[in-house]
Length: 328
Image (tube, rainbow, N blue to C red; front, side, top):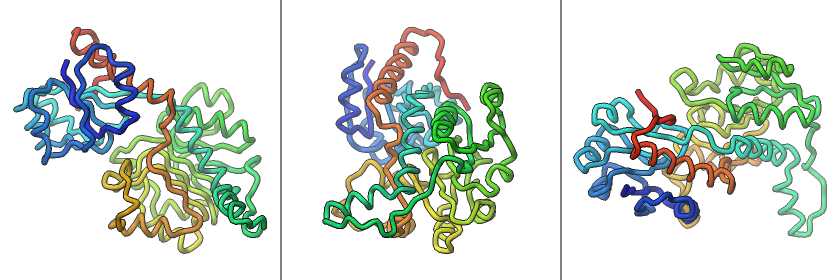
């Protein structure tokens, strides 16, 4: 099968070529949009990532160009209009899970960095400043953590929190029986957030979860609490979070995702003026840590993404069961 791979970085090409099962791959560094969809002529399939746009306009053009399959090399599918894909008879397959431990470990890394300020200590020592002033943190042992979402990543994160001796309260519309048996206490969203010292988000972006962290729910946090989001940028109302940081209601913020990340993340903008005023404001806070959607980025995860992507392609060609198909 001839596959056009969009939003390609060097590491994508490395792993996709290494685990290719005989397909013809053509790599494009740019993200898929309506402006460059003409590049897909002559391809049977596309392999796209989180910032590629497969909306109704693009899908209509893909159909005209002969594309019959979209391979998402990610779990999220908010960038694909599934209804339009079905109308155009374009099959959409995804990688439903890849190294949940990688994202969970990154969430904990953000907590440790924000708490113990190791990033600041590193820079200080390099400049000959060995003072401990303004580097004080707090013990995670006994800390009350609100775990929002207990899917694969949430479960992996729960294990890490237990190892640190945290007191974990969880919210999920579908509680995990094994975690309940292990002692995890579930509550309503409000009860889980109430007086939380750390809140970590591990849930999908759905209509009911969009902006679930907002000016109303922020008031439930313990004053000076820490918010971590390694899931989906749209889970938080960013302007409300900025207000919370300015007022001191929110004491720390760690983001690996951002609602308007498509024009920022995975690009080197070091020589440009950032046009997004919200993220420019966030970067200016001393108690904010932002990484560019790298939570998944381990060798194990990249291998799993590549292997599952080609398993999906092979299943489509062979006509076998499409275990990872997404339908409207």
